[in-house]
Image (tube, rainbow, N blue to C red; front, side):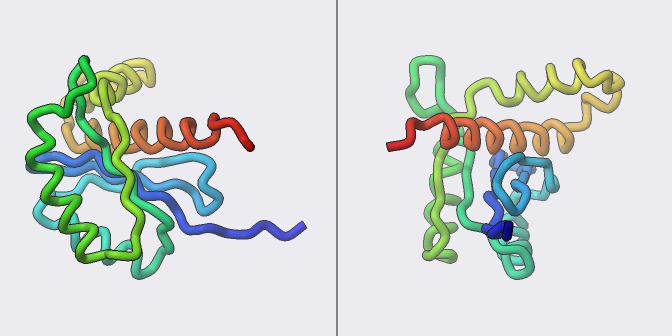
Length: 147
């Protein structure tokens, strides 16, 4: 049986200073953290990555408030998303609800036995949050009813 390879899916937890980046395996089954990059270098990081590894789409965490309204930080994310769509017009970009991902990331680090000093490392939190966003997105598409 021949397995067909697909491009990866990239997940982004966008931040004003740092951005967490995660990717799926080539079969788009599971996500793992890739890096935390300074946000001002994110566009080049994405371009460099997709130059050597195919990516089918990019999922960006959409920060929302408890009532479902966009959070204040959308004003920073929207310009980046617009620029991404302009510079990579053939790349599908999906916004995905990221409520509670930082809290879940911290809890995952505690549950994993990570030392308190390591849990303070915001780079780790951002990368883990990107992985959670991407895994949640994968779950949502795989749990959709097949017609």
